[in-house]
Image 1: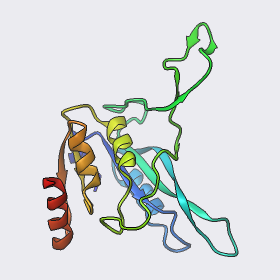
Image 2: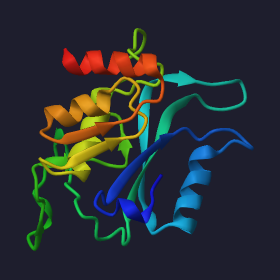
Image 3: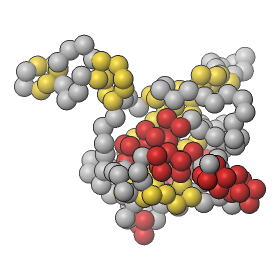
Length: 186
């Protein structure tokens, strides 16, 4: 998935849940990618969802994990555009030598700005549009190409188009692909 031949892309996002004992696909993939390629995990984002899943023996699960990979040194990504929330910080900075770069608070690695779709999602794995938008804005510039290997509902492709990015979408289910094309034509 994240081979050195993808050097032109520079960054990649990978979604998944924490899984269960014996089935930690996201974390196994993280370790395999770092062990076998030049790609490194730059950060883990937790998307805080509104609805909860739980059992009697643990807290409600209200999140999903997302990993951002960078080819090579994580401190030198090809693109990293700092994202801010719409909440004003209320102070100018820690001291006059290091003033705040924006009057708005910077987005943390726990994202709660993207609400759930709830029922009537166009695809069972559909993610809210603000989630895709934030990832695209953080990791690309206008005119860049976004690759979505598991297109599903096409939300990433739709967001990329709205933000002035080209996109390549793959979906192996023919029926889902047809629905994706219809959503892109609308």
